[in-house]
Amino acid sequence: MLHDIFRKIGYLIRRSQQPGNAHEEAPDERKLFERLELNKERIQSYYGNDLVLRACNVGSRAALLCYIDGLADEKFIGDFVLVPLLRPWLQQGMRLSHIKEHFLTAGDVKETDALPLLLGSLSAGDCALLLDGEAGALLISSKGYARRGVEDSTTEMTARGPRESFTENMRTNTALLRRRVKSPDLLFDLCSAGRYSKTDITIAYIRGIAQEETVAEVKRRLAKIDVDAVLESGYVEQYVEDAPYSLFATVGNSERPDAVAARLLEGRIAILVDGTPFVLTVPCFFMETFQGVEDYYARPFFATFLRVLRFAAAIVTVLLPALYLSFTIFHQEIIPTKLLFSMVGASANIPFPELLEMLLMSFTFEVLREAGKRLPRAVGQSISIVGAIIVGEAAVSAGLVSAPMVIVVSFTAVCSFMVPAHNDAFTLLRFIFIAAAGWMGGVGVLLCALCLLAHLASLESFGQPYMAPFFPLRRGDLKDSLVRAPLHDMVARPTGMTGNRRRVGGNK
Image 1: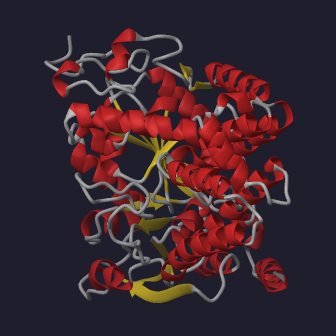
Image 2: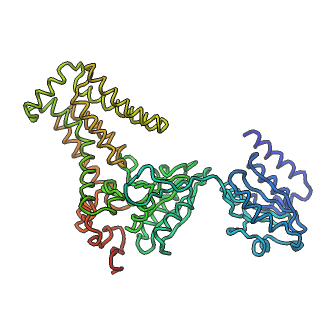
Image 3: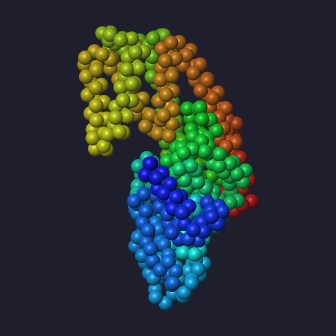
């Protein structure tokens, strides 16, 4: 940091000592100067040793080509920038505009006189060409940093359907969407966020389907983001969501291009953030997390069965431990007699009360799951499986926990993996319901359930009710909720999402 400060001070001292600079300092410091040496010193003052400066002559004029090592494609620069510029028959006294129009063979070339724009382009992987005697520069797109190829999705795996997933590269992701929606009405609006990261953000929507008011609201919320850096789409999600203090996310996300394309065709808006494979979609609904993308590739009866199964697993994940506690502590009369005797016999010698026993087992499972995620993949899976079996068996053998308690916690853990989108919220809710059941029994569970339903009914996502189509009731949208009707029966897009609701048989 001190090194950069001294370099800038030295640069200002050298400028003040040069003759004629009194007239050159008058222009805006954010603009480029005509003197090539001054522009070179200014650019060098912002970057370290990774800045590459290539001095050359274009015709009879001195020129400077600069780019960031590791971000720009040096082979591209050599073939499409340097080779055309260093030809001996170039005209004398050539200007930047003439070079741009007649000599450079690169595809994307822009001319600018703004220093901040030049610095931003260099940081993004472009190269800049400056000429002595001209207060401007050519910004040539030459991005060539290392990037991951298109691979299988690791978070939304399916037995049938495309295997492609988004990557960390913005242009790759927009191309994956364009391949599935080839209409020219698919629009991409570019913006950026982060004072220092300058992260590119793309808003994707289909003109004529997405509501203009929703698109404008997305742009407004993105424009209000004022933070040092945006390093992942999770940053954007937390700044644009409607209920930041809710346990439930009101902004959807997906790693699959086919899932995002399907949501765009329903009238939603996608937010792509450079540097992450997870694309945000708004508005978001509670029920969409129980709808797998594979449901639309399977027959409707089995797809409906899977959705009901996921919803039942979510209920089990949140309520089963709490109901087990409330029945064993407060409402033993509900349990069948034979089962009650079996449970009493299994827990007769356990030294801990049922509430503490449940909390310890649930906490142990969360520790094992978190450890499995953080360790290397091969080791993590072994730790999770072997650790759970060994710890559970040893705890039962040592008389620290009862066998029914291990069964309840284990089955709850398995069910939690069926709805990964709500896993964070359901984990916290499970502990809340456990505490309420241990305190007030079934009454506590009922009160927590009512509060949860009231909270869900009050949520909105970009003007749309979070619990639609159940609250408020939208009969036409029930065909694609817990039940998945045949595709030829789902002729309309979701209510309130778009004015162009007809999607089968043309726009009517």
